[in-house]
Image (cartoon, rainbow, N blue to C red; front, side):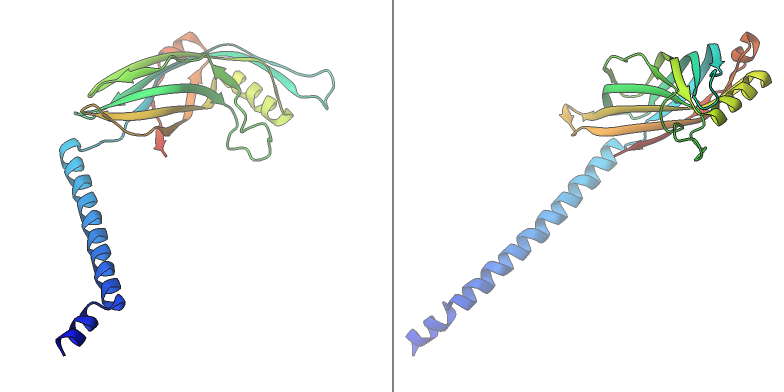
Length: 220
């Protein structure tokens, strides 16, 4: 009789049930531990989103060359001078930037222009940099448009803006970022920022009265 009892308790089904219970307990414990680590990290670091702002903008030598053939695209030349404020408001978290790129777009909201999504001007390369906690970094960039082809409607809108004395553009920022806390580095993330509308006065006096434009920042 005792031998039969030992055979039932040590059956394969009972062993599988015991192993399954252990796996479930281990999985729940791991999830709870991971949640606790995330909570402790958040309570200690209190991460805040990084912020980008266009603090100054000017444009020089804006010129639209109408084509001799009405079927051809117009050509745009211009030099945009832009100053950005990159703000890291975190107390314990630093940010490392690489592959930083700036571009200027015109008519991005005009679905009739198939060239609207392409940049009108692209900035010179920006060197990789590190931003410590509670730091505001100023970035001055120059974006140049050299004989950029635009559709007829966009060319007419640019000419209208020139006559009005100001031009409204959309400025985009992209970068690869990594966050560092206490020597621990995160994986790299894609950062994008859209600053719109950035209204730039064409006269020197209007450029001096430029109003800062906050950017919408997304990290994925």
